[in-house]
Length: 219
Image (cartoon, rainbow, N blue to C red; front, side):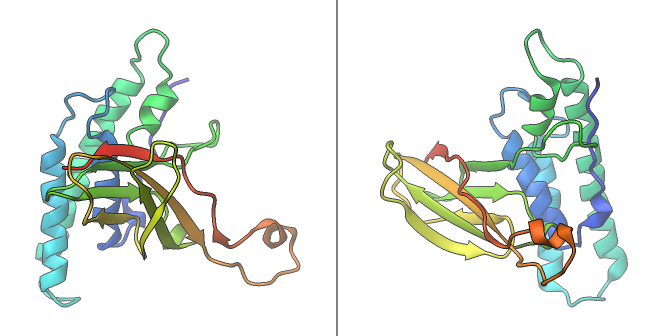
């Protein structure tokens, strides 16, 4: 069965779209399944940063056409990247799983045939002593916060907790350069309103379990 990607970019607000974009490009950075992404990840990141810069420097409602144009450029890049991921995932090498390939891109898959794992990624930051981390989960998913922690201990002890964030991205700074750093993440879910329905009885709010750590050498 061929995998399909459920991109649905219109579900993201102007502020959320770059966050999702960074999550995808971080997931695909140094990903062995995608050695030469099309378009280049740097091109996608540039479009995301361009939209962020516009939002930060203009009030809501200002120059809407320019904002929409910048969003359209980013959406086009992400749609093209999704096609690239699909081409690779649906033409796997022997012993490769198309679902694993597609999921590793950070893009959501269509349908519920396969359980979607929580995707979390870490890459070297732009500045010395920094790492850039991204994770899935936004307000629409019932996620109200993201918690992060890190350690240099290979036995995964002595965790240091970084400031929590409202969105699924963070820059860990003040780290020790040239050391391998292990980073873990967990989303904090909104506590559902009390209800007599069986659906809400099964739901739980609060922090989810910590993710399996990802590691990277700090620049």
